[in-house]
Image (cartoon, rainbow, N blue to C red):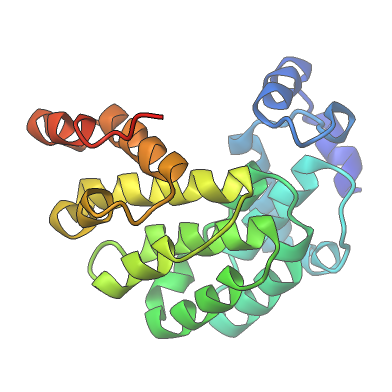
Length: 225
């Protein structure tokens, strides 16, 4: 029923657009359902209680099924249940988009518990679980729950995987926008790999949240190769 409904919401042009953004996902695994439509469908399933059986069906066949799965997890109001479902789901995530779009708000209400989970995710060895751990550090621990130790933890993640390195750069670019003085040290002291260092600067310079003067300072820190 769910798969049939997803195909009823298909937009072939959007499928083609999505396929270009996700080179790791075969085009025949993408249906082409726009995110707002998929989120509304998730709400319908959750309210009707039909989502529980769907969450048990892993792995999924289609990209949109993974995103739908993530959107359903977001709506779980019990923290322990949410974490349980996240930990069942993350090992099956195989692309950056499904990884990044799953953002349960309840995780922010329990920072200590969430940080404990993040530590596990970062050590998982699975590309998109590690990426998810870094993203949760970025989403949840650069504002009121910030501690400089989180910068060290993010910098300490070692991986040759492109999608992990990109997330590290995104994390530090966001840290520069929110916690400039604490995070710029990681560039001044060259604590990241050359690729991560330069990509962080690129993303920070593209940001509208960083002042012109700071962008000029960052440009001077680029490492020539």
